[in-house]
Image (cartoon, rainbow, N blue to C red):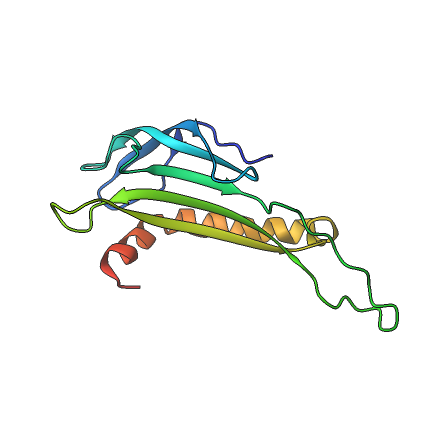
Length: 156
């Protein structure tokens, strides 16, 4: 599988963080169609952030592909139209133990990116699939701090 992260990962800009980095260790993914890494150390200035993943406060990133890649069905002989085009769904998720209220037990927060690609588009229109992902990555990188601010304040 091509999903491979190089460690450390340079984090995106966030309010009150300075040069955040995340050192990764290979972890066990929840499915054989995935890869998972646990944060083993953090770098830069990230006041009050846990320094590593633990069983009670996980800090992991999981990358998954469809368990079975779907192919295009046959074209309808009478109309020449594809009736039902299946999707291949890829997911990238980060799980982080957080405290909902001081003195309370940790709970897991999650963030997922879901990428649905119509079967066949990977070969018939790869440049436009790549353009979609390029814009997604660039937009998230550009507004990383703003996304963090919105999630923390509720103001969009």
